[in-house]
Structures are given as structure tokens and as C-alpha cells.
Image (cartoon, rainbow, N blue to C red; front, side, top):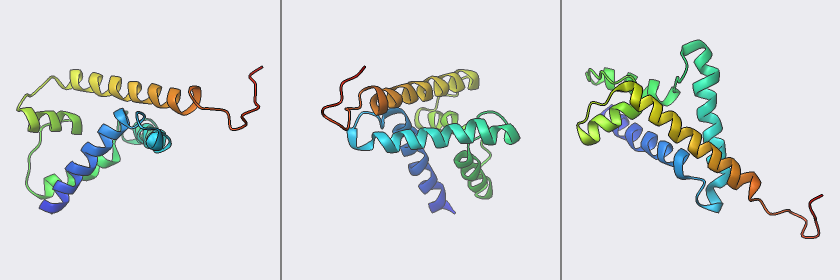
Length: 128
């Protein structure tokens, strides 16, 4: 279980960073959009039943941590990550706002780089 906790930290942190920054590299832009849409699906669609902002990855990770005996008082993964990395116990509302802003930033940049900056597939194509 300890290994699973570490795997979740590495995977989940990587996913968060990829959601915010994956649009930068042309080869990862499409996958970045997919992971952002999957995140939005978890937050807003699954959130209908489990609460707005529900994250399946966070749920599974927190289940593992409870089985390991951790008594985390962080309401979100990002809050837990900040607390573990810096020792700072920030206001959860502030962390949620920052998380939402990071998500929106990543999504807007992903949409721009996937669609607005896309080259036409037909070189003879001229916009109307």
C-alpha cells in the first residue's frame, strides 16, 4: 500500500502539471486536451452525484492513505500536496480558487493551441 501511495503522488502530481502545462509542447497538445476534458468530466459530471469538484483520482488516493492510517485533514489533493511540500496549511477556499484558475488557464491555452493556432490541413485552403 505504501508503494501505491507513492505511485498516486507521482501520477496525480504529474497529471495536475500536465493539465496546466501540457499545451506548451505541440506533440502533447491533443493529449492535454483529453486529460483536461477527463478532469472536467470528473469534476462536473461525476460531481453531480459526488459533489462539485469530485476527483476520482483523489478519492482513490485518499482511500489508500486512510488504509495506511493517515488522518489527512486536507479537503483536496492540491491542498494536501501544498501542505506536504511546503508545510503551509493554506485556506482551502484559496487553494480551490487557485486550482480552478489553473484549470481554466490550462483549458483556455489548450483550446487555443489545439484549434485557434491549428494550421489548415489543406495548404490551398483560404479562410472565408
